[in-house]
Image (cartoon, rainbow, N blue to C red; front, side):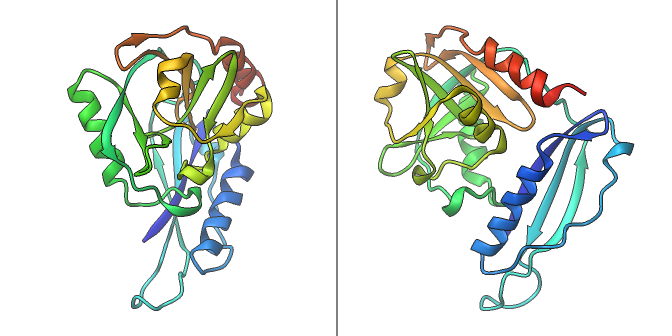
Amino acid sequence: MSVFESVAVCEGRPLLLEAHFERLGRAAVDCGGKVPELPAFDFSQLETGLVRFYLTAGAGGLETPFAGNAYALFDDAEVGWNLPALRVASSAAPYLPRPGGWKTGNYWQNLDALASAKLAGCAEALVFNPAGMMVGAAMANVFLQVDGHWITPALETGARDGVVRAWVLAAMGASEEIFDAEALRNCSGAFLTNSRIGIRPIAELDGRPLELACAEIQRRYFDEIFTC
């Protein structure tokens, strides 16, 4: 078992680092462990990419307390804030979310949904829990514009507690709600968030073109978070 956080790095500067570490500590405590001592990491020597901090259960049997052994790995990856808009499709397979909004090492369901979407010519998949409520995207959180207001799946659905998601909620007055696929049919715009892509618009959702309505929040994210 493991939990992790992916920290975007822009020319040696980690983005939203304290929020990521807070979530890692909360995940460790929820797993029955304690707030870990994370390994020292010199971000200044990096250029652009992602540092993934993993906490593992450690050695021992099933009844051994969660140890929270910590590891840090750097991936040389594209990190952005205004990447091109995507085609996105809904996944038909019920998604069993992890408790607490953690990001865990078991991403099989996410990868399976993503692979199915790519076979259909889309770049991402929206996933729904067994009750039919939207959880998010396979690799990101999602925001929908419905009747002029922005909404995102509530954590109670199993949505991941992403740091960019939290920043958007605070910055633009969006709300957390529990909703099903009907919201997709009623939305006029949508975008995805995670540490790697920042805020990325959805151009087409289940074959229906959408307005590209997130330029203002993208610019604010660039000005307040991404600017190096």
